[in-house]
Image (cartoon, rainbow, N blue to C red; front, top):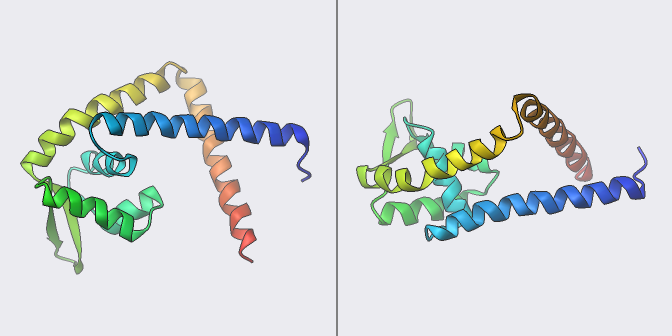
Length: 151
């Protein structure tokens, strides 16, 4: 496929919108004295009542282990998270909220998730479903095209 000026213009418009969306999360995080990565880690843990491993968080955020380990370590030092051994694999540990961590995240994540849900609900169910479908397709296309760069 040939990329023409019209496609390039639309790609740039999409990238600006993606950047604005990330900025919304960053501003939300900053209001709570957090980085965007810290907000995202709290969000993942909030919606995983049984906790999750560092590897699962890294995969979900497409982040490297060092970045996520640093976030988790900061939260552990603040008494917000603890490690639980995984019986099936003693090398992995589940990361879970302490009671203080659940209270802290409870003041941050449910309001942010609610705002995100309301923003999406304003699109209506059909347009939202189409957005998810198109975003999934774009993501798959990007993974394929960027993988081809390393060949």
